Amino acid sequence: MTKRQAGSELERKRASKVSAEPRMERVPRGRGGGGARALAKGNTPRIDREADFIVIGGGSAGVSAARRAAQNGASVILIERGEIGGTCINRGCIPKKMLNYGATWAAILSGCLSHTGGREDWNDASVRIHAEMARLHVSYTQRLQEAGVQLLNGEATVIAPNLVRVGDAVLRAGRILIATGSRPRPLPVPGGELASTSDDVFTWTGVPASVVVVGGGYIAVEMASILSRFGVTVDMLVRENRLLENFDHDVAAALGETLAAKGIRLHMNTEVTLLDQANGAIEVCYRQADGRGQGNGKGGKAGRGGNGGRIESVRAQAVLAAVGREPNVDGLGLEALGVQMTESGNIRVDRQFRSTVRTIHAIGDVIDAPQLTPVAIAQGRWLADRLFARRGEGADFDVTPTAVFCEPALGCVGLTEQQAIEAAGKPDRIGTRIKRFVSLENRFAGNAMPSMIKLVYNARSGRILGIHMMDNAAPEIAQAMALAIRLGVRLSHLQTTVQLHPTVAEELFG
Image (tube, rainbow, N blue to C red):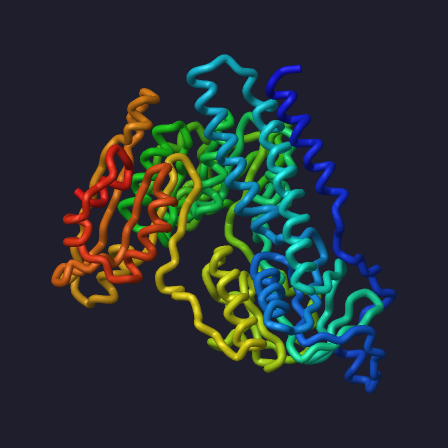
C-alpha cells in the first residue's frame, strides 16, 4: 500500500467513525401544506412544541445565534433541512480552502517530484475534505446539544408570526429567526442547466480536461485558480472589464496579470448567450464587446452579432457558472405573512435584524449584508445577546477583512483607493503606497510570481484606511491588520516598528 493509499484509507476510517456519532432528530415531511393560508381560514393548529427561540437554518448564522441564545438561558429549537454547518462547512469555506491546499500541493509536487497527478490528486483531496466535513458535522451537533439546543432535521414553513410547521408538527416561539443562507444563482441563458455551480464541484469524482468559468467575482477566481493547478485548461468569461469588481483596482489588475501568466485565458467584457452540447463537449456562445478588454482569450470561433459586439464561442468538457448567489427563502411562507423583501430578493430588516413582521428576524446571506461567515457569526451572537441577555455590543462591520483563496491569494481590509477618495471628497486627500516584490518562498521555488502590497492612507494625518495585498500570506496578514486599522494605526507607526525578517509582512513596514 502506498503512502497516498494509506492516507486515504485513514481519512475514510475517520469519516466512518464520525458518521456514527449522534445526529439531529429527523422530522418526516408533512402530509399537506397550507402554510399561512390554512390559519387565515380560522384553523387553530395543535402546538406540539414550544420554545423561546426558533432558528430556521443550521449554517454559520443560525448555529451561532442558537448556541448563544441557549447559553443566555433561552429554550431554543434549531431546524435544518440538510447537513449542519450550511454553506461554509458543506459547500464553501472549508471544502474550498482544503481543495485550494490540495491544488497547491499538486502543483508543487508536479514541479519537483514524480507523482501520478490528475484524477488521483483530486480524489485524494476529496477524501480528506469529506472526512473533515464529517468531523465538523459531529462537532457542531455536539456543541449545540451541550448548550441545550433541540435539533430538528426537516423542512420548515412559517405559518404565523410565532408558529413554524415542520412536517406534521407545529412549533411555537416568541421569536423566529430566518438564517437559511443562499445558493448559487443559475446561469440565466438557454442551456444554462448544462453548467455546474460551485456546489457541484465538491461532488465531482474527477477533473475535466477543460473548463469554462463564467463570472469574475471571488468564487469564479478561486475555482479557476484551483482547477488550473489541478492541470485543467481554464477559460474565464467575465462580464466586466476587470476581475473582482469590488476589490481595489490595482490589486485586482495585478492578480489578473498573474492568472493570465499561469495560463488561465481571460475574456473580458463578455455576455454569455447560449450553452449547447457539441460532440461530447459544451459549447459556450458569448457576445464579445468590440475593441475592448479581450485579455488573452484566444482560439474561439467568431462571427458577427448585434448590439455592437461579436458572437464568439469556446468549447470545454465542463462549464462552471459563478454569477452570484440568491437567498434561500422559497417555501418558507414569509410573503404570505407580510415579510417584505428588498430589490435584490433578500429579507428586509432594520438595524436590529427585525423583518417587517416584528417577531421574525433574519441574518446571514438572506439579508443585504456581506456574505461572509464571520459576519454571519457576529450577527447571530449579537442578536442572541440582544434578545435574551439584554445586551448587544455589536461587531465593527466597517472593518471586515476579506480574502480570495487563489494562487497567489489576496488579503484586504479597509477602504479601496476609490472608496477612500469618494469618502474624502478630493483625490489629493488620499495617499497610496505600492510595493511589488518576489517573496523568498517563490524565489526558492524558482518562480518569479510577484507579490504586491498597497496601502491607502489619509494624506494629512497618515492614518491607514486600507491595506490590499497579493501573496499567499496575505489573508493571515489582513486578519492582523484589521485590528490595527480599527485602532487607528498611522503610516508613521508602520515605519517606526521593527520588522520580523525574513517575512512577507515586513514589506508593510519599510
